[in-house]
Image (cartoon, rainbow, N blue to C red; front, side, top):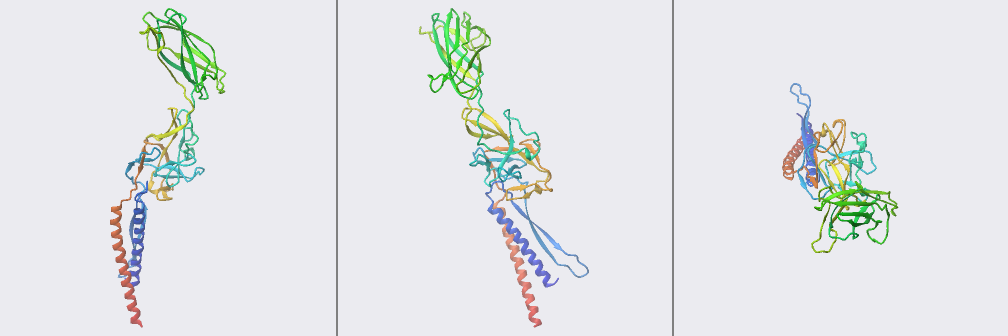
Amino acid sequence: MSITSALSIATSGLQAQSAAFSSISSNIANVSTVGYKASATSFEALLSDSSGRSTGIGGVTGTNSQNISAHGDIETTGVSTELAIDGSGFFAVTASSDSTQVYYTRDGSFHTDDEGYLVNDAGYNLSGWALDENGNIAAANRTSTQSLAPINLADISGTPQPTSAIDMTATLPADAAIGDAFVTDAEIYDSLGTAHSVPLTWTKTAENEWSVQAGNPASTADTSVTTGTSDGTTIAITFNTDGSLASINPSPAQIGFSGWTSGAADSTITLDLGTVDRSDGLRQISTTDGNPKVSGYKADQDGWSAGTLKDVTINADGTVMANFDNGQSRAVYKIPIVTFTNPEGLDSVSGTVYSATAYSGQYQLKEAGSDGAGGIRAESLEHSTADTATEMTRMIYAQQAYSAAAKVVTAAQEMMDTIIQAKR
């Protein structure tokens, strides 16, 4: 082997170890980067054909690659929109809210930006399936990334539900005089989510017999302001001699309202006054203090206002639940997990973001925690797979190899200088 061959081989060693240093420095710099996958350097010997006593020029190459399939440790953060994948797969993200190019990452450092989109610290928008009012995926073709949309929480509001039923419990005074009347109030909601206060007048019509009638609803903020018109239905109620409910007429008991000042649709509300021959709703007993009154009154209705988004929670299956200040919750998105046959074939766009290639195979959109896809852990982040101790050890080996190759270059240069001097 000639001196020039030795010089060339030593130079390839310097280049290979430089590649290793690049990998090491990147790993150390990203030891705290969420979802980062550490890179490693593979070395390959280069030998040309040998014949007889002559040996061709040899050398080495160094190639850096990320171990994309490696999973980092998961740490709880307490931030509801920060996510980690417990198992295989990636989040689908886009570079902007209006981009159709989908990328893949395990960096779940998502937070809400000024426009309401969930973006991670690298600036990528999280994509998911939009859900309909029943919590079902709205897209017809859920296997394509075209069925995904950037998750936006800015325009989400709770859908109002008009009151359709009121469950009532109350004790009516058996010692009240015939003709005595007592008034209670019930809160109801119209079809637009506006709250109203309805006065209910309980009148004793005979022994063990009562009637209840709903008056015109009023504003809950100012009960002097009438907000609708009651249909004036009178409901007759009778009790058994033991105070339990005997009958209700009409049955089911219903009251109606129209002419809402809010512009809402007419309302028909069913009153659940209890079970016949039982005291689980209305009952009648004498008062102990001789002061007849309605006691134990409670009216639970099933309506609610529109509500304002308070916060979100994300389930292990990727369902994004919007929680409203009216106490209601609604499923608004589902975050898929994207898997590949060969994730190592993905092309690195950045240290934590990848694009699909022919080598990675076709993507598959799966519900989190099913069919081999990892589950989603909310309020968590996946650590970098880079380890400082490991990288320091690699650096020592690389530094020693680089220094040795540099000495070979120096020695070869001195030998060539000697030959040149001899020729002169």
